[in-house]
Length: 204
Image 1 (tube, rainbow, N blue to C red):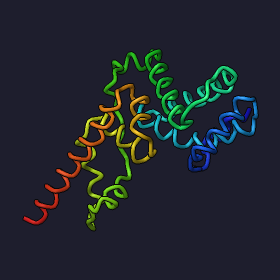
Image 2 (image 1 turned 180 degrees about the vertical axis):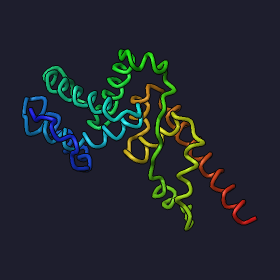
Image 3 (image 1 turned 60 degrees about the vertical axis):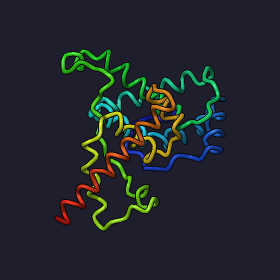
Image 4 (image 1 turned 90 degrees about the horizontal axis):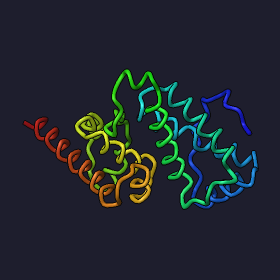
C-alpha cells in the first residue's frame, strides 16, 4: 500500500461515478494501484473538509492517514457503495468525531457536541451567477457566510463545493433528506437577504 510521507498531494478532481466504482471494486480486490489512485484523488478534498470540521490540521491529517490505513486493512469486508465520494466523506467524518471524543486534549479544551466549529470558505459565486444573481461585487457574499449556522455552512460546502446530492449530504450529516434540503435552502435565503441589504445600504 502507498505511504503517506508526502501529504501535500496534488489537488486532483474526484473521479466520476463510473471511474469511482471501478477503483472501489479493484481496491477491494487488493489492487494497490487502485488504492493509491483513491488516496491521490480523495486525500486533498477530505483533508480540506476535515480541517474545516476540527480546525486542527495535524489532528485532521493524522486521522485521515489512519483512516486510509484502516480502509486498506478492511478492504475485503467492505460493501459496494453507491457513491465512493459520499461514503468516504461519511466514514472520515465519523472517524474524526470518534477520535476527537476520545482525545484527552479535546475533552479538556472543549466539550464536543454536534455544533462543531465548521469554517466556511466556499465558492458559491458560480451557483448564484447561474441563477442570474450577478453583480461586480459578488465576492462580498463571502463574509455573509459568517451569519449562517455551522450546520448550514457544512451543508452548503457539501452541496456546492463537493457537488453532493441531498441524500448523500443527509447521510454524511446524520439527518433526514428534507432536513438537508432545508439547511441549504435556508442558507441561500439568508445569503440572498444579506446580499440585498448590502446593495441597499450601498445605494443609500
